[in-house]
Picture 1 (tube, rainbow, N blue to C red):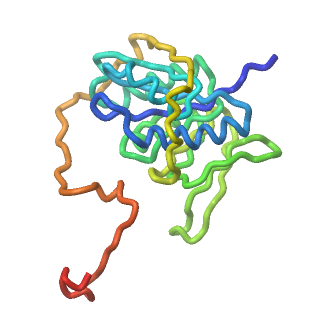
Picture 2: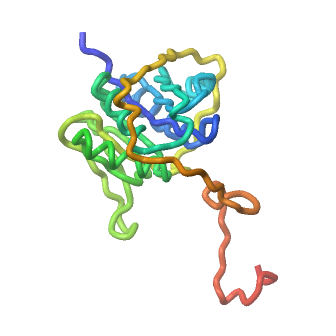
Picture 3: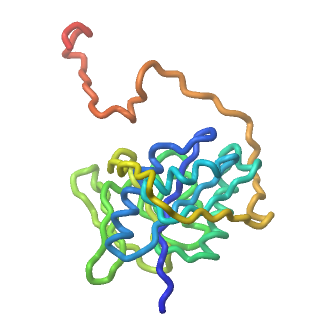
Length: 228
């Protein structure tokens, strides 16, 4: 019997918590996994993050691969790329989906180049080709005037980043059960050429614009704020 292929989503961590985009990715992954008869796996990389694994199961994952190590407290892209490369070579997923955030847009191109797989960036829709079973990655092209459907040929995994807010997370199901597997990468995977200097949080008042459901804007024709 053929081994059931895995669809992976890359969970993002902020501090000691799972970023909401991780659950949006699981909604996409769940839809694809159900249509393809695949197993949905979330890859969780961080420090003191193992206790958050069940959140990903409740959000739709069948399995969580957890890499939990003190050296992963801060995001260093080459270290994360090394770990993902080792996992991909070991488990051979068919698809890897990340969010088109600063982290996703940093890690995925580096990983794509390192393992020799295609990458489609900033997707707004994911589906499958009923004939080939390959992933169809839809993204805006030509300045947003057309929507291009892209299929990746060559070796797996088929890799893409998805724009945040392109899909609503599934309603959490706390009765849902899944498999949580702790992974211990080789020492070579933790090597890095980068030095972490610090983190300067963004200072803003109110809800971050990227998290707003509706944005109202106006130009100079409004004259002054009162005219809104």
